[in-house]
Length: 344
Ligand code: ADE
Ligand code: ZN
Image 1 (tube, rainbow, N blue to C red):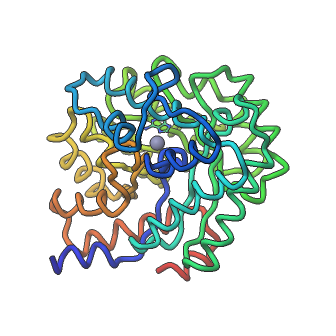
Image 2: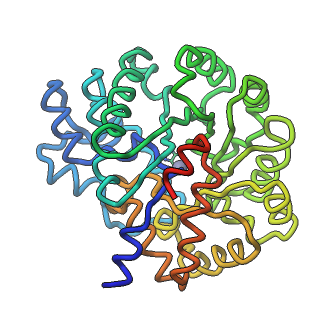
Image 3: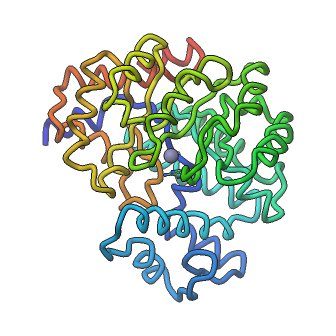
């Protein structure tokens, strides 16, 4: 357990976590009660009558194919958005995340949010952003956790909708470090969104995009992200683990020093367990700056950033290498230099 203490106590930076993916069954239940809403699984699932039923539904142990697992995840994830209504709800969502990771010694984080999943339900930008902002200030003041935000655009919606949301977010640009691309990757290559990401780049935003494991065309998606998006490629890539299959892709990532946000626990839910350790090792040994993150902890077995970090020990990373992994996240983060100096 002495070794676990080392992993627990090391100062951490989290760069890949969806704030909506931190909505625990406990908090969702509380918000639903407060807002007078029924709780269902998915958008049209049966009504759930207790927090225990909700937790059980979210963690269904039915064996699933990769496609079924993905469909189950998105139904569960998007189905939970409807409990978020007021500024107080958004504040509590973010505070709940900050409190969890403060106990795991996270000092700085860049947190994704999915505005299209909120505006489509009639939530105003002010409600969402002011709730987040208050939590951000309180976390810095009281928990010593600093934060910035990454606005993610949903790739399964039309590029025009992404552009509209990009423009609508500009009044809040002080809070937003970068623009990301997430949601269901099936037949949605990054280049469909080149216009909005090029504009974001010209406007001075950092850019990053998801290239998840287990996707068709994964290598072509990684190539687009690392060499074309926004002009000559993104600043970071989210997941991107399959770059380990292809020396040419690893070369681009290394030459452009593109940070990679790896979420080990997320991949173990698919059939990538035996490949995971070796692929991480290959990327790390090549000198690529991989980082350790949680993705959607409330929807992935309650595995937060610390649980993901503990897996690195399991995969054979030494204490010295673990320090390198922690430094990688500081280096590839979009924090100011003074914040970076403070963290490490
Ligand atoms: N949005 C939230 N979680 C996601 C995930 N795991 N993959 C793609 N989009 C997401
Ligand atoms: Zn993600």
